[in-house]
Image (cartoon, rainbow, N blue to C red; front, side, top):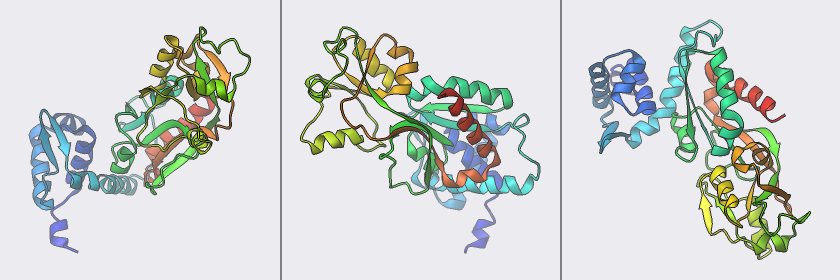
Length: 310
C-alpha cells in the first residue's frame, strides 16, 4: 500500500471527482460545490498528478471522463457515502437535505410515474436537485459508474442482464402485454385476434440495447415464426403515434396503454399467445443503499409506484 501517495488525496479531491463525473463541467461543478471554477480546476490538477491520469479530456466542446475516472466513480461514491454517515449521527431529514438525486426512466415510465414522483419528492425535500434522464441516453452503465442512482423501466421478467452482478432488481408492479392498433385497422372490430392475425400484419418494435430479446419473441422463434418489424423506435409514445397513422401493430404494457395520452383512441386487444411475465422494475447498485438519502428516495419511489399503479 502506497501510504505516501494516498496521503496526498483528500476528501476534497474525491468530492470534486464525484461531482465532475456527474456534471462533466468545471463551471457546473464549481456552482454545486460553492467554489470558484479555478479552485475546482486546481483540485482536479492535483488529483491528476496523484493518479497519473488525465481524468477528463475535451472532445469538441464537451468534457469526457477517461476510463480510469469512470472506473473510480462507484468506489468514490461509496467512500463519500461512508464518510457522510460517519460524520453525521442525525437521522436523515428530507426537509433539510440539499443534495442531488439522479434517475433514468423509459419514456413510458415518464408517462406513468415521473410527474407524481417529482411532486411527492419536492414537497418533502424542497431543497434537492432532482435530475430525471431518458434511459435511452444513459443505461445501466450509469448505475455502475455512479452517475445514476436508480433506473425504472418496464421489461420481461426474463430480461435482467446477468453481467451486472452488483445491480439489484426489484419489481414495483406486475403487468400484462397487449396489442394496440388504429381503430381503422382491419383487426379492430374482431372480438379476439388469432396468432395468424397477429403475424399477418407488420409491427413497430422498441429498441433497448441493455435488455435481451423479449420472451415472446423467443417463443415465436422456437415455433419458426417471426414478426415483421419494419419500424423500430426508442419509446412507446413514438410507437403509438405510428399506429395512429398506419396498420402497424404495437405490443406494449397494459398499464401504459390504459394511461398514456399517446395511446388514447387506439384499440386494445389481448395477445393470442403466452407473452411471459412482465413488470415495471426499480434497479440500483447494491452498495448505494448504505446512503440514508438514497434509502429515503427508494421508499418514495416504492410508495409512489404503489399509488400510481393501483
